[in-house]
Image (cartoon, rainbow, N blue to C red):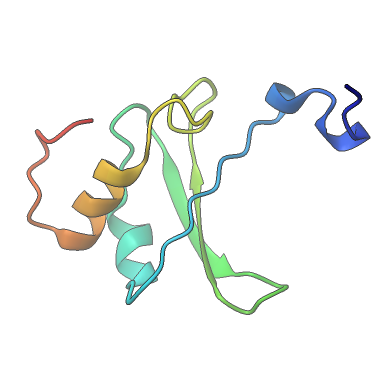
Length: 90
């Protein structure tokens, strides 16, 4: 199997994307998101292609959420809902 040039070394620059649907307050998500597995930082912007809000989570290298081993769902729920206790972990 031959991979396209941009994917020949997929883990050299990992990128993991989760899409959220529904009524999401992106500013709240960007402000309150904390990864339960690393010291992530967040930034809020606008996708230049779609014009939609874009929350970028900058995970530490080797973070299991970044490489897709673990889901970001518990961290997203804590950020958006606000009443899910910090002790809730995947």
